[in-house]
Length: 349
Image 1: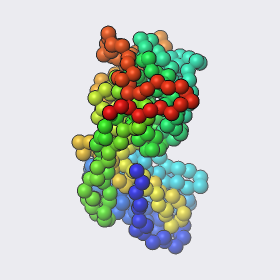
Image 2: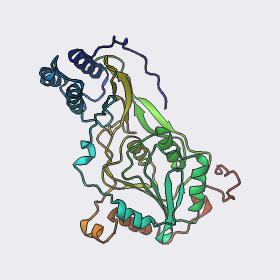
Image 3: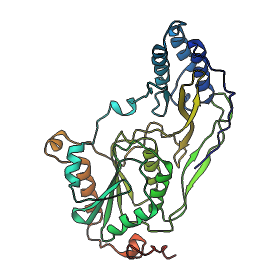
Image 4: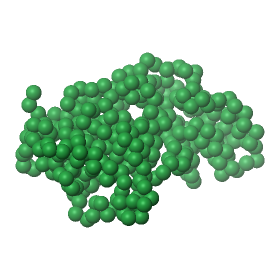
């Protein structure tokens, strides 16, 4: 999805004046940020609290700290102040929640014999259940990569896709992977644009539809594993996947981050990034604060001490029971088995 953001502000003349940069930042956010009402933020009150902290004599580091703290009032992981010496950030969307992911324990499940392609680590686990870990939506994964992954799982009854601790990246990869699970063109959400400087100046929601891939599809049962560190493009991926009947979300609520970021600049040259266009789910609900799982599971401390990932085990048990007695068929996965050097065929109508 690509949208053209018009340049609605003339570039100011360069100035390092603290007051000018404070006012420029406050106004930029006031006219363009998209979640004021949803988060019940009184931006005028924020200005009144932080303006007295600005002084003519403050240095650039002091100014950066004050402006960064003011932006943190937005409670938004997509909002940053960017200078040559620092980048402000807001991490509370996941800091006050259980990790529900342990790298050491997770590596014991993967071992050393897993396949690795396009940032995806994948292998076949017990009970003929495939497992994929994708830890970064900024890592490119191509169509041919996905073909090979699904061909590897052609004899599996079900699939686990683990996106825990995936902080996001490209929406293009979210769409590319999700299209592998769509049997038909599907409404997966809506996008809303700012149309003016008022806090409630928004366009009507514009539908976002996902086209099914013409390559290999997976229509057998799927469990998506999530935790609070699933953010931005990962939140978008989970939001798309939850509409498919064969998909079950297992783990913790995602971290959210459904606002498309917009970039601008202050008079002193510092960059500003903030959420400007909300993406809603298929029910027109906001997922800025995350997507709830179908089955809520936390990693038990006793399991962790024994190198057991409670969430993976819950997913494997769930899928084993769901597929008990079933035998995978080519038709159920909607692909024709071909060699790695042949082009996968589209499913039959």
